[in-house]
Image (tube, rainbow, N blue to C red; front, top):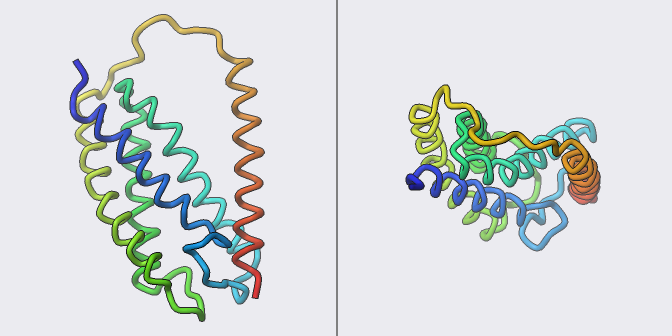
Length: 170
C-alpha cells in the first residue's frame, strides 16, 4: 500500500518544478532584466535553478518508489525552493531595477507555500524509510540511462543559455 509520503512528495515536487519552470526569464511572467549582474553569477544562478527543476522531476519517480535517498534529496530541493523564493520576494537576490510583476509575486508566494510541506513530508519519508535499500531486481539500464542523461544535459544547457541570455537583455 502506498503511503501519503510516496504520493504527496512526488506531487509537491512536480508542482514545484512546474511553478519554477514558468518563471524562466524571457517568458511571459519573469520580465525583469538582470543585465547589471555579472554573466557568470547569472549563469551560475540559472544553472542552480535548472538543476533544481530537473532534479525535482527526476525525484518524483524515486520518491514514489519510496527510496529514502530520494526523500533526502527532495527535502534539500524543498529548502532550495524556499530559499530561492524567499530571497527574491525579500529583495535580497536577484535584485532587478525593474519591479516584480504581480503574477511573479503570486507564483513565488505559492511556491514558498508548496516548499514547506515538501520539506516536512520529505523528512517524514526519510524517517520512515531510512536504511531501506531498493527492493527487487537490479536491471542493467546503463545504456538507457546514458541516453537520457545526455538528452537531459543538452536540454538543461539550452535552458541555462536561454534563461541567462534573456535575463541579460536590457
